[in-house]
Length: 233
Image 1 (tube, helix red, strand yellow):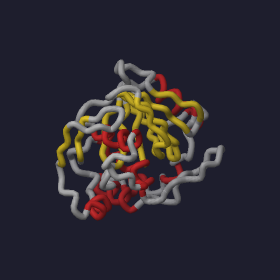
Image 2 (spheres, one colour):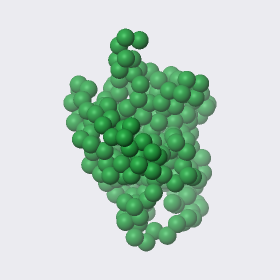
Image 3 (cartoon, helix red, strand yellow):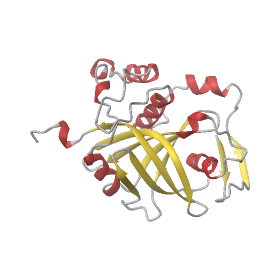
Image 4 (spheres, helix red, strand yellow):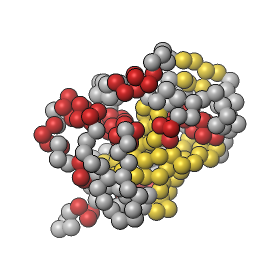
């Protein structure tokens, strides 16, 4: 993963390569996403990004429908290693193609941070903890059921920084492979243990300052508790 110091114009003053990029496309396909160095939040976010990377994008119809047509082989491998194969093997229809209203309220008003996974210039997924300039809830906005706008305050070395600068300055040396638009996130509230997940694509990035960016995401997959799942409650 390349770690760089960037300005809004994509000017790099420092960079270092932390892994061998040879045969990177094969490595991105074979990477073990269950490595213990990822906590559960990052595993889920990366799993959603990986499923999107392999063509499991749903319809963009306005009504809520099932977003998947079965689990991706990488997700099945993760489920097997974590011991959840039987528990979730038939759960893929619960992945929606839009955000329920409760998800939108949760992301925009309850969360001081969101783990988000994006894809680097070699096609490898990396997770980052994303928060706003103040560290308080309210840094995420949702204009409708399939869009999120995230005002992210990043820092030097954040893997997301290279991704956003590839959008701000597409003429830079960074790759603009198709998978670079993929993104997935996990909204988690520790006090209640509530978790709502989303995946989709980056549509646009705005540079506010050297480390402040607005990410505009198109959400195509969601899962997690919503009131309509339990109408009797």
